[in-house]
Image 1 (tube, helix red, strand yellow):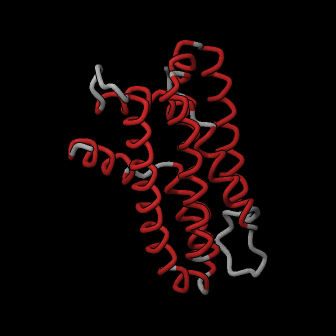
Image 2: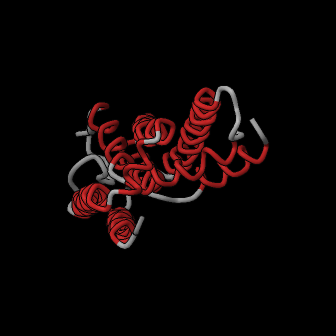
Length: 203
């Protein structure tokens, strides 16, 4: 595993995106443990895209305009639903001190779907992973799998760091209604912006 891959992967996983916003919101709303579960869900949501890249299925998605658009529309709608649930104070992204917390399966499922419904991830890994494996490598699939696992571990660790930071601020904001309203608006706006960015993406 080359240092070029490690550096590039680190830059990619630290970039704020849908998974980071989701993890931060859950961590502030429900605490560190819930944030870790959310981070796990986001990490698992990367797995299908990586598998598609290794098996060459991402090339089909890249070539098919209809498949890409259908997956993109589903992703946009899901992000908009997340934005609405956050702003309205419902669902797993509620920034609240209430005792009613989302279940572990729900947190994981939302994290998985957020990444699963982003077609750009498959296209990204189709272009990203092969750069670090020689064309004539005898065990290309094995090497791609190792790189994929390393990327997922780095993603999970980075997200856990994000959620630890967010959870550390939780006690400071739960007692301030004005701050919680601002946070709900900020997270809702972030998901809306991410949905618009995805809507404007092309293959």
